[in-house]
Length: 100
Image (cartoon, rainbow, N blue to C red; front, side, top):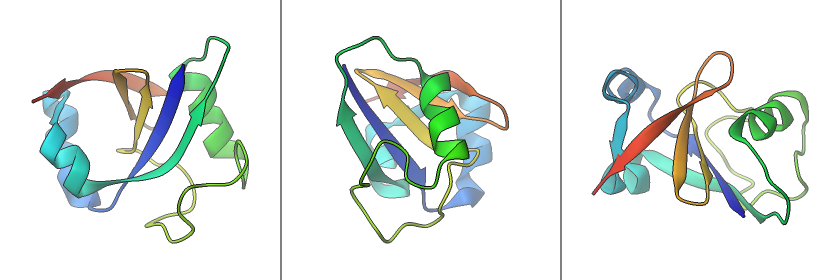
């Protein structure tokens, strides 16, 4: 099970994405930057990843990028588990659709 975390570089565009609960592949590549990626052997959910990023300074070891737009996970960031995408909210994460 592969998990990825994307941080948003433009927080102004988050309102539109949250209302539509849909994001395009192009927006994912331009507005978001991949900051962490890992392969897990056990079952994992988005809430558990959200908690790790919320509470710890170095969750799950070494991040992919040292230079990031912000240090902790915040509303509007995306967690991807296999091919399912979750948008982080104030508390937890909601599933969103990826539009091609």
